[in-house]
Length: 201
Image 1 (cartoon, rainbow, N blue to C red):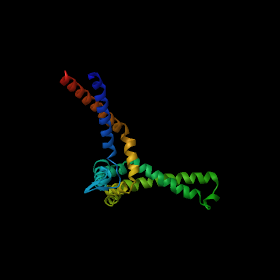
Image 2 (cartoon, helix red, strand yellow):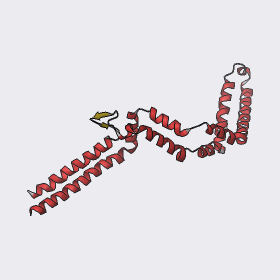
Image 3 (cartoon, rainbow, N blue to C red):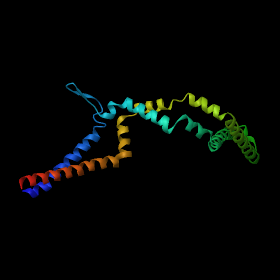
Image 4 (cartoon, rainbow, N blue to C red):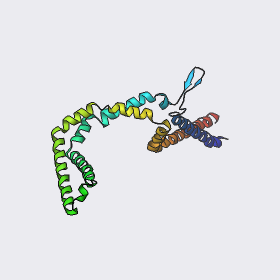
């Protein structure tokens, strides 16, 4: 009879350990809408605290990942200024190239003019950004509340989509937590079997 304990108890412990961890993970999101059990209000941890969590995530991103200083440094970088200048140049050249009046200019001359205009635009825009870029960046960032933007975006998202996103990013780790519940449950079950058989001996 004691041999059965060494299979039964670990199996039961593993099942209970896995199931409790599985439920704990599910209860992060479920139930999405609150319902009452007498005086007790039941709702998933994340949906219930979504306002606090959204504000916390927005604050962390604004302070740690996308601070005004980091954004200003990225915008003020020479390669960023050059990329922006080239984008402006391409937009202007596209408008010139589609102009009916400009279409009358012979092809070779038109290409030379377009190339010259592109060089002028890139040079002047880069100059302008280098001279007044920090001031422009400061004015822009002063009006930009990154934390609030992120908070509003998170609150506006469908929580089913957020749940899917979480499981996509951390699915392997969550499965590991479930598996660890089963392992620990099996170990506890085995220990119980040992204690029981020693007690019966």
